[in-house]
Length: 379
Image 1 (cartoon, helix red, strand yellow):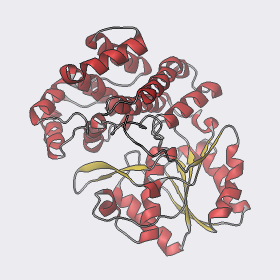
Image 2: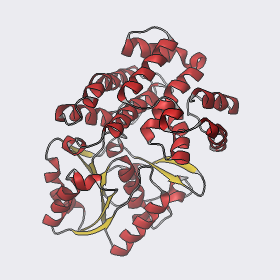
Image 3: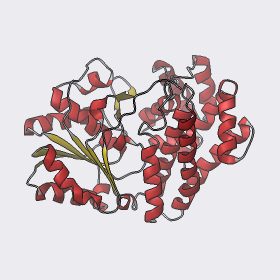
Image 4: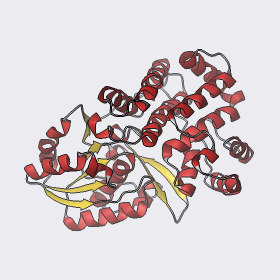
């Protein structure tokens, strides 16, 4: 186990009605808020209304930016930052899922440092500050509510990439499972897949961290047990709460302590499908994980078998891969591109962008030939 620093400054408020605490928290941070959200779901589930009331009750001036897309675009971030700067806001409040909160993280940096979002994302600009961020989560999936990572895509450079900086930690995150009770079945499934995939990225990282391994197994077991139950009872508050907390725990640093890194290769591969076909993030992960494990039978076989034994009671690589594929399918998430509406005629385009962006992991690098095999496996 390597030396590590355990750090997470997010004040996370969890449970029914916790947004009632948002106003006083916001009042401690500033007096002018940029309220960022996506589409109509936040209007339907009450999260937007509740947040707006909290800010107004404290006399906080509000400037709004809506329309953040499920696979967030850098141009939207820059436009939101421009609007926020012109309004002189001193905090950002994000209401939505991972795409909204990820966007808000970079918006908060761009307003504070008057910088270009893509230069931040690519590491060409090192920001020195960020406005305080409050997150109101409406989709259990990415864990962004309690981490310092954001993902954006750029149509001009044909990239979807992640960026990490401690400046991106929200000051406060509010997690009320009732806001997720209206999430439709498909996006509920994608969120469950996402939390499992985050756990697997840690599992396949480098370094010996046995306690972190046990935490990973426990998080995935939560998803294995309660995910299918939730899919059959989408408005069940207790099940929504269990999955919501599991998703947060899957990517709030807890599974990484003691490791050199996670792998993140499957996420890099999945971003290619999201960029090319606007495929939901979770769907790209359920497509790529069984394929990636099949490709890495020799290199990662021992870790795959350990997973199968702990999670499914099986003792071979192939049985483990089949168990994961079966689980993803049981949730309603695709495990082949055709199931996501991506035709075989697109193979060359997928491979070209995978190779161009050098899609691979930190622990398991991939050759062009291996990426070619992966393209065959996902169809």
